[in-house]
Length: 443
Ligand code: UDP
Image (cartoon, rainbow, N blue to C red):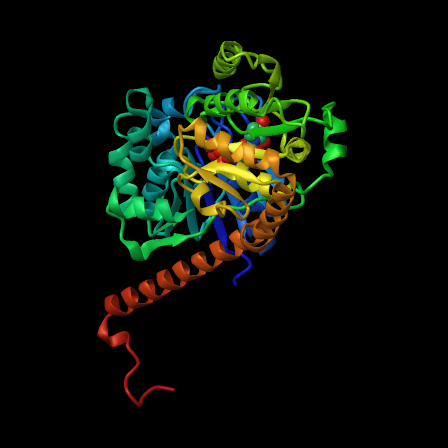
């Protein structure tokens, strides 16, 4: 590989620098951060172009060896939800181009993230004559199907996604269900889709002995603890877990195996469980009170990645039952911490959890099915231990960032080789005949 290969990541709303857990800072930020660092470790030079959302951030941040974050001015120097950013994208595109020209930077390839950056990258790719690899992270049609009228995406999203699916040179699908959706919903050519699952940092996310984790969080060793980590939004359906908890308490309160059952909810707009700042926390508290389980549901607000292993490890089980999920990093994080994970059988979750082996898959929006599986783990703690061990092994085998970077690099090299061949052929056809070496002649 040419060590000077320069990659421009485009990720308009999700910067690796952002704090995680809030509305618009989740899996995509983690992906950009980890993939860039690991690509840089393989010798690539990576710049991440993202929208500047504060006057206090410098234009360029040296983020990690070989990785810079370029904060591009497009729109107000203030936070805006991602659904409000579309009108600034042509400014964003032009500002990226100006930065590249001003610093005389020549990139070999663009790697865009989310639909708006996909549009920016296909425009830049055409202008700079370099290939584009794109990953959607979430698809507008899937969102529309599940959220209907509650979907606040700009009306043009799906049409733009269709265009990106057509114009990008390669599409990365993180799981088989997205691979299928790209073909059936977006008419993407199957041959240009590469399946590259996301991953987890297995050094940050590793098992902590349960007793140590619980001491750290001030939790009793006698309780059966269910853990949810992630953004606190209606579509993550944490309400489903609260309902299952209430059903479980009715059923399992008499169990001699634990003194109480608790649900820990980690995530939200700030580090306090403030329902004014994170309205869904208020919804969960009201629901829990109505079901008589307010004492058992503990919301924490968001936490940074390096403290999350204590939360996952404090659990007897990790649960996430969203309505839909493009990939879902948190189930993998729970698995990496050696815990059994119960997830809804949707999107990437149906791919990462092996049902009955590393945890359980349950139908979404069905608290009764979740209660059944929780009860099973409550009754058979050794089953949870066995599943947790298998879960960690599966992550180490299949879902690490070095593996993602290796697969991504393979994709880049293939694409760059194609591009080189294409340019060579193009030049041959364009060269005047007199320039061609004459048979048998010359030096
Ligand atoms: N996260 C975090 N702190 C929190 C809540 C979430 O660091 O308080 C991280 C979590 O560890 C995971 C990411 O945010 O890495 C969420 O990614 P996921 O793919 O599960 O969901 P998304 O946010 O992309 O919908």
